[in-house]
Length: 208
Image (cartoon, rainbow, N blue to C red; front, top):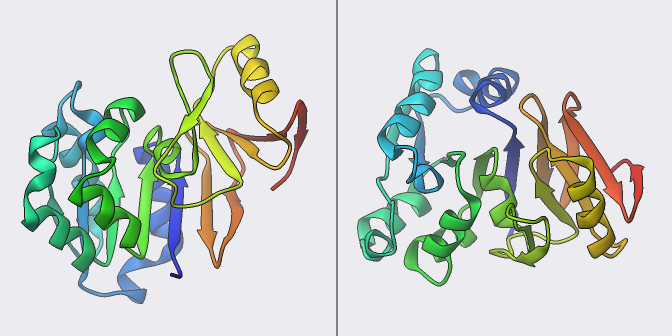
């Protein structure tokens, strides 16, 4: 299935991405759903409102799906809306919580089938075959929507070097800071905004 993914480092980078996409002109009346699961510990309502405010200047419909725990993933409506939407926006927050909620659930299955996703901050790390555990930087298993790239947030150099040493050279590690934007189309990643983005393979800094 052809899938489009954007990994953006923050809500501000999300705003930049939407502006660059000329969203109103390309898809007037676009239907966005916001999935704030990763923000369950800091406030899913606040996270959803922050994303919705960015969309105010665009001619788009926005609906927040309050999926905060495993129980809510069984709501058929939530999975249906994810599949119907023009794009799905994943809020920043705890990648481990998001993974535990989405994995092997109707919502997770819907994410695997949706065609356009924008992942803000840590939520980008959940989507790949390899996810970087933020507690120590070790690779673990993600949702598997793409392979060959693993995302992590900026960290102290010792932790980043440990993470790099644990990945094989077939997997690019992308350290995604607040201003960075990467896009995935036709099976290939591209750095759209390289501020706050560092890519490495093995221990060597490189390019995608």
